[in-house]
Image 1: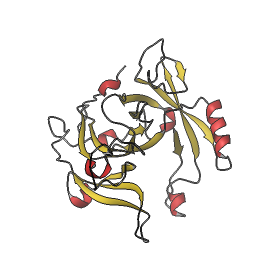
Image 2: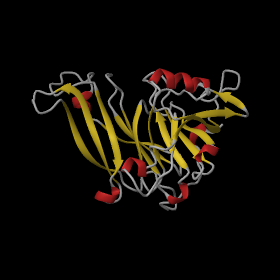
Image 3: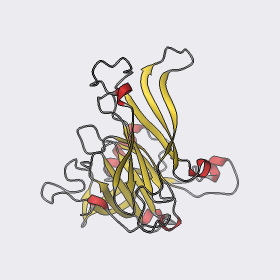
Image 4: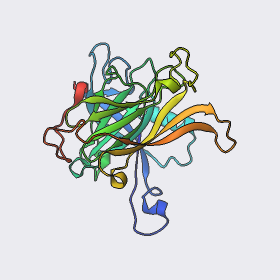
Length: 278
């Protein structure tokens, strides 16, 4: 897990204006009660067999400097030397768009069908000075029903939408909602088993078991509150010469009442930590 920190400018190329040419790459380091944690445990999270499961700790950022001339192996070696946390396939993340929660970044680790896929939160002490670190927390341990989470988006009502990429496996891809305010995890959609479940008998409509839901974004600013855009990827070669594989772009409506806090405030966060609390 890495964080790039640069300084935005008003002039120059758009990449320069975004602060992507004058900064440094930082690696995420984690400690629990002063004990360095360099690798996520599939069973114990940030803990060990001695401590049992631990779902929270402190994080810092190790400055790796300008890495533009490093190869992948060199970057990996530098990260290991700096004690950067290794997790099970860090996949995607999103900032909380609500003004009161600008310090919060959420990300998922995909892991595998047999290992624990998790939802994490980084809460920076001061987002204006991210190098000062903050707290890290596991919000979903991996045994709640989801599997191999892929892409992530967050709407202005504190709802995290996450889709699955189970790979070439019989599991049919699903879409999940995690409520930041209540800690609820709710399945809100799933692909049609008729097309993707190989266990359905005598099924002439079966396409492939190698499918995923992907690329989910909050589209409320375009399609009104509660709407998201997401795609279906069916990894089977198409007979149409203009297409590579099958798939669809979908507009998904998730009723705004689903997963909302009791008061319905779009900027509410009760501070619920889910099952990941230590």
